[in-house]
Length: 69
Image (tube, rainbow, N blue to C red; front, top):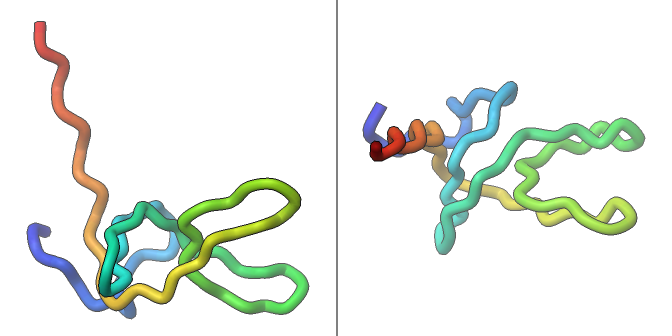
């Protein structure tokens, strides 16, 4: 898949690239066990602090390059 897809089609069981309208992030889908809120998580640090985004599109994370020998 070489084109960006609508976020509603993104897999929620793996990390993907997401487009926020201004930036590209590596993100994964999370669900808050206390509130049942769901969102795309791009960072987590400290005492439960998180950076969440509401992207419009997603793309699979490309495979890494092969080692040069």
